[in-house]
Length: 208
Length: 252
Image (cartoon, rainbow over all chains, first blue to last red; front, side, top):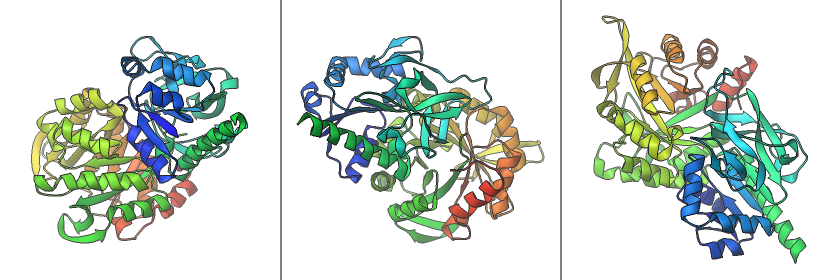
């Protein structure tokens, strides 16, 4: 069972709709006991970094997310949910993130001749061969964001060129992040959610 | 590089897609889910749903429609028409809309834009503007109530104010061009593009493939919206994209 962490953020229901459409068993929950038992965890997110971390803290979810990540449960952060996986965010001041992947989340410079937010369909280029990124190489997905993750190349699976080279897919072991919205990126995006399900199935298989 | 977006617009009345010429002789085009899925197959980048239901009590039909479309079609969905309050926005976003477009209600109360942007994020709030060139005063004038009521607002200044209030995107319809099939209002979008830095969706006037190339080559708009040319099958989205690609415009 995939648990979508329910903390009153924008894209939660659309993620559920996409997983339901794919017949991937899932539930929305903010209950630490339910999250502990999950085979896979999806962390959605739309909005501002600091507010989202506050919302997770208020619901006492930070520790449980860190615990399940540490115990090897596959985790997928989407859009702001991906940004929260990093150590720090610099949206409206400095905020501490979940710290599951080393790196900072910083503003896309607005002096590069590109419009900010980065909104629309943009092309992904795979930088490391990985089953999560394979389906996205040279394919476009739907982005809506003004901040991006600065992290070491070893944590990056795919990038997108928007004045800066910004990571579109990141991964550190069982912790995966997508800057774009797979639930809004047509069949290509749905295939990415299927790939995440396969990561979960493989993790279960090897632990049994 | 960010792809230029092609957006079909669906007029929805009581849960059905309708099409008329200038809002008269409405004919039933079909089921929103089926039509949305067909556009997804053709390569649409986004869908705009315009709720043209006249009576308030029937408006909840649009929420059900969006709920159904969002369960089957996985691309950005924008809903406009009859959105007056934060609650209206909330209901549509919960149903699966990604953005809401405000028009007359924002003119009546510009703070609605700010309230929406603060609650849902600027990327959720599209300011829709209907405008017509006024030769007497040498400016683009904003119209509300589906283009029936002239205001004293200058469209370019209103666009800037809307962005300052928190609108994350503009959907600007040229009433001079709408329905003429003589091409997009290039002068209007050039002026807007120089005035604001948020994404702009151009609407009104396209009739031929060349018109799409023109608007993307001559202005810096991010998207082009069309209704009748797609509904009546005069052009397909794949035709448009093929043409744009051949002319060196980045599309998905």
